[in-house]
Length: 106
Image (cartoon, rainbow, N blue to C red):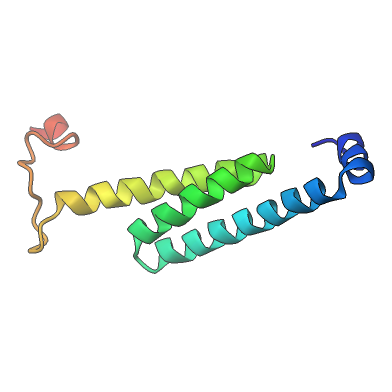
């Protein structure tokens, strides 16, 4: 929001501004929790936190943090996908010839 728009809202609806500030703060906190979850090795929890953060930041017009949350969400989804390709023995579940990278080297 522009400064003029925020001043208008502040004069006419102080409650709406406080609600946006609260959502922005909570969205940023959710993004930080998601980053920590991802670093701790829990991409499933990180995915949940990033989804919440992206929605809250989008609603509060916090576009930079929305983009950061969406980027983190993409990282978490890639890690979840990579985990699904590896069995509990550490060997890939797919044949390397049919794998998206293996096909280039076959």
